[in-house]
Amino acid sequence: MLGMCVGIDFGSTSTIMYVGGKGIVLDEPTMIAVDTETGTPVAIGNTAYTINGRTDDAIRVISPVQNGIISDYTHAEHILRYYFQRLCGNSIFKPNVILTVPSGATNLDKRTFLDVAMHAGAGRVCLVEESLASAIGAGLDEDTFSGRFIVNLGGGSVDISVVTRGSLAVSKSVKVGGKSIDEAIQKYLRKKRDILVGPQTAERLKICLGSAVPRKEEIAVMANGKSGLDNMPMSFEVTSTELFHCIDEQISYIIGGIKSVLEITPPELVGDISENGIVLTGGTSLLYGMKKRLESETGIEIIMADDPLYSCVSGAAAIVKDMDFLTANGYRFKTVQELS
Ligand SMILES: Nc1ncnc2c1ncn2[C@@H]1O[C@H](COP(=O)(O)OP(=O)(O)OP(=O)(O)O)[C@@H](O)[C@H]1O
Ligand SMILES: [Mg+2]
Image 1 (tube, protein in one colour):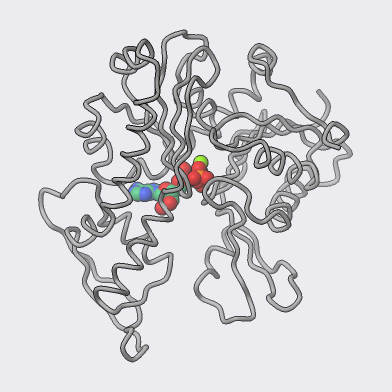
Image 2 (cartoon, rainbow, N blue to C red; image 1 turned 120 degrees about the horizontal axis):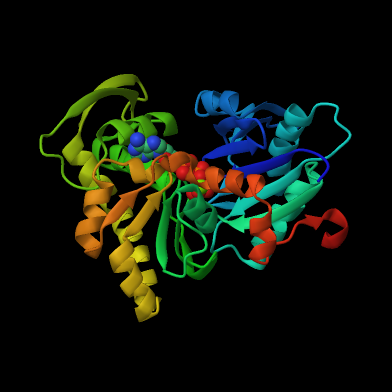
């Protein structure tokens, strides 16, 4: 196949790219900063993330992938085009792309992913479900007939699937994730303590203090924000107990999603899952106590992927290395001509 092969996890929080023969070449926030008046992009990725919450109205920071799917076509295309140009330079060959998509994506969502990648400069694109990619990335044998339950806890969505014999038997995407947990923290501080914090502070608090089960010993950290009373800067203390309670509703949504998929899974596969356990991937699986909470709620052993943030792109990478997987499982590359 002419041109480089790229595996891409174009996630709600981060964009990760793997290039055949090189390894992971990019891991940056899925964000773009644009000039509000002209619409011209001023920063993409890490720089846009740093700008977020720190600018006046002249610059707007946009996350064009929301809840796992592309919600802003133009800006998603800008981001991918920028990265493709960075990767391919002046090469005359366009990249062949394995792009992961949420398992619950509709045909329209999938079409948007294809369109955006092609118009951003991909030569050919093949879409693979996140859960399947994560299963392969987490090291599960795709040939097995035995059912595997994969939960990808991402930034914008939770992807829950039962994978058997290289395809999805049951799947569902739930619109909660790391970002909605961050928003719950911002909302709690605003409503209960009259303190305003930006998205990055909320994310830091979640990572340092947040938990899915109460911590054995309460911990507290100091953070900076703005008083809602007089809009003046202030330092304040937050405890792990406060955060546990304020994010519990989000954790319950995740558990509800997992249970609803178990309910509709055929009994034979549920038997396999009880034996094989549930594999947890995605950045939000790193939340303190997530494994313990899910084990106690489902009664099934939880297996953490070795590198949860990279499971999905690792699966895409494994496919790049062994393209036969695609044909063996009915996946196909599409070209721009096939789109119209
Ligand atoms: N140690 C940690 N504790 C809690 N959350 C974490 C930790 N590390 C990363 N996260 C969260 O993981 C999320 C990113 O996960 P991931 O990269 O899997 O999402 P994504 O692929 O971009 O999103 P999606 O798959 O939903 O489109 C962020 O919300 C981040 O705050
Ligand atoms: Mg993801």
